Amino acid sequence: MVCESRKAKLDTYHDGELSAEEMHIVDAHVRGCLACSADALARVQMKRAIQVAGRRFTPSAEFRKRVQQSIAAKPRRSFRLGWMLAAAAAIILVVGTLTSTYVGTRGGDQVFSEIADLHVATLASSSPVDVISTDRHTVKPWFQGKIPFAFNLPELQNSEFSLLGGRMTYLDQTPGAHLIYDVRKHHISVFVFQERSLRLRATWDENSLAPKKLSFNLQTWSQGGLRYFVIGDASPADIDSLAKLFKAASSI
Image 1 (tube, rainbow, N blue to C red):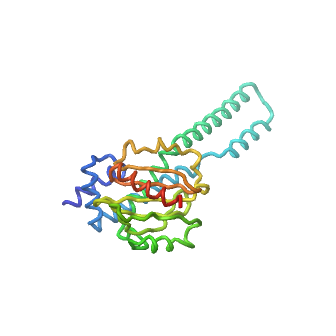
Image 2: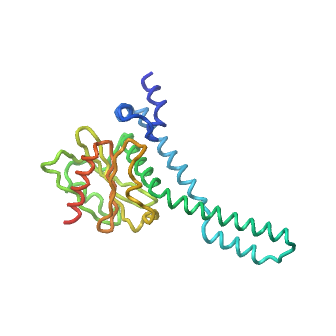
Image 3: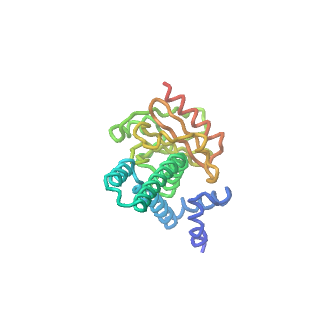
C-alpha cells in the first residue's frame, strides 16, 4: 500500500511539483525500494525519449530555404494562387522563426530539465556509480580514455563533503563525467562536459537556470573549456561550497 501511494506521486516527483518535505519522503523511498526505483528510472527514460523526439523534427534553415526556392521557381498562374503561395511561404517562415525563438529561449530550461532528470535517474538506479570510491585519486583516473577531456577533483579534507564515486553520462549526445557527493545525508551530483561539444551552449543564461519550480538547487559555470553543473536538494550554501571547491581545483 505504501508503494502504491508513492508510485502515484512519481510523476509529480519527477516534475518537481511536490513540496520539499514530500520530495525528501519520496526520494528516500525510491532509493530504498527496488520496485519503485525501477519504475522511477523507467519514467525518467521515457520523459527524456519524448524530449529527444520532440526536438528531432524541428524545421531546419535549409528546409525553409528549399521551400522558398521551390515556391519562387513556379510560374505565377493567377493573383489568387500567387497570394496563397506567398501566404504559405510566410506561414512557414513565421512558424520556423517562432520555433527557432522557442528553442533558443527554452535552451536554459531544457538543459536544467535534462540535468535534473540525470540526477534523479541516478539516485533511482540500483547502481548509481560505476566506480565506487571515496578517493579522488581512484575516481579521476577511471575516466581516462572514457571521455575526451581531463578534469580535477577537489580535495575534501576538512570539509563536510564525501565522494561516493562516479559514472559516465551523456548530455545532448555529448559524453561527460558524473560525480556523486554526500553532505549531511543529501546527495549532490556534479556533471562535467566539454562545452564546445554541447549544441545548446550558446543559449545558456545562467540566471535562467535557477530552479524556480523544481526542488533542487543548481550552480553552473564554464571554466577551462569545460561546463560544470552542481545540482541537488542540499542547501544553496552547500551547493555553493562544493562549486567553490571545484572551481579552486580547476584553477590548479
